[in-house]
Image 1: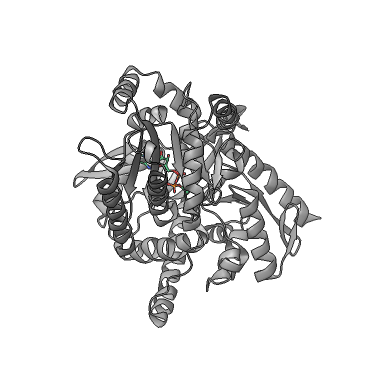
Image 2 (image 1 turned 60 degrees about the horizontal axis):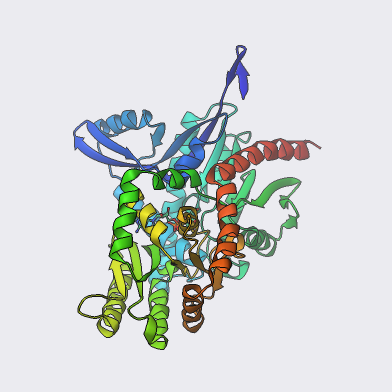
Length: 489
Ligand code: ADQ
C-alpha cells in the first residue's frame, strides 16, 4: 500500500492486453451492453491483495463515431476498463496480420507464412508498421491514465512493442511484460525480419515473464545471439541496465471450479451425463479450434486405438469440444473441414445404429456445462503441438473429485513441466504412442490413478492464478528498484 494524506492507498495496476475482458454490444447510438468474461486472468487480478487493477485494451468492436466512443468509454469505466479504439484497417493489419499470421504461428514453431515470397515481404513490412502503430496507440492511452506510482503490466505477443513506447514516455514507469505463448528457440526467432527490434523493445521492460524456464532461456539466448547482449542468471544486461527475465507459471482459480461443482444445477447435469454415458468410459478434449492444439492428431490417435482394440469400441466415447476461432481465415476453415472429415470417417467405421465413438461439437460451452463435463471424464486428452501453458489440463484436474481420471498431456504444452509427474506425457506427433497411452489410461489400476491425480491436484490447487499474478506484481515492484539502483551505481 502507498500512503497519501495519512490514508493507505492501494497500489494501482494498469493491465494492458490486446482485448479487454468484456464483450460489448451496441444497443443504440449512445448505449452499450457489456458482459464481463470471468476468465482466469480476470479472477487472478481481482484476487491480488492490496492492488487496484484497471484494464486497458481493445473492446473487440469497431466504433468509428465519437458519440459511440464516448458512450462506450463511460460504460466501460464502471467495469474498471479503459478502451483503446482501433479502426478496421489497423485491426486487419496489426491483429489479423502481424499478430495472428506471423507471430502466433512462429512462436508455436509453425514458421513464417510461405506463400508468394515477394507478396509476403511487402505485406510483412506494412503489417509490422501497423503493429507498431497499434502498440503506440495502446501506449498513448496508458500514458493518459498513468499516475506516479502505478505499475503497468503488458500482456502477450500483441504488445511486444509496448514496453519501449511506454519507457519513451516516462523512463520511471514500472513496466512488466508477460508472454502467454511459448517463446521459441532462438533459431526460430532469428527467421523473423523484425527480430532485433522486437527483442529490444521487450527489453525496455523492467521484468519479462514466461510460463516456463525453457521459454525464458530461449528469450535470453535470442538476446545474446541476435543482439550480442550479455545473459546473466537474472536476465539480460545491456550497458549496465538489467532486464529481469524469469518464469511465472500461470494457474487457475481452482476454488471457482470447486464451488461450481457444489451447485445443484451442475450436480444435476453431472447425473444426466453419467446416465447418458453409462457403461462407457468418457474421454474428453476441450480446445479452441486452432492448428496448435493438435486436434486432427488426437482424433487419429483415437482411431488407431479403436482399430487395435476392438473390445473397447463400444465401451469408450470421445467428446471433443472445439470452439471455432478465426473462422474467416482459410487455413482455419480448412482445419475445420479436415476435423469434420476425420470424425465422419471414424464414426462411419466404428459407429453402430445406436452409438458413435466420437461426439464432436464446434462450439463453446458455458462454464457450468464445462465443469460437469470435466467431472464425468475418465481420461482427458490434451495433444497440443505447442502450447504456452494449457489451462484445460488444470481445469480438468480441478474438477476431478473421487473419479481421479487420467490426464494424457502433450510434452509440448507448458503444463507438462508442472503436471508431468501426474500425467501421461506424449509426443502428439507420434500417433502410435498416443494410442498406446489411451490404452494405458483406460486400463490404469485405481491406486496408480489415485497417486497421479493426487500429485496434479496438489499442484493445481496450490499454484493458482492469484499466486501467479501476485508473484509477478511483487517481483515487478522489487525489480524496478533493483534496476534503478544498478544504473545509479
Ligand atoms: P488458449 O490458447 O486459449 O490460451 P488454454 O490455456 O487452454 O488455451 O485456455 C483456454 C480457455 O478457454 C480455458 O479456460 C478453457 O476452459 C476455455 N475453453 C476452451 N475451449 C472451450 C470450449 N469449447 N468451451 C468453453 N470454454 C472453452 C493462451 C495460451 C495458453 C495459455 C493461456 C493462459 O495459448 O497456452 O495457457 O493463454 O496463459
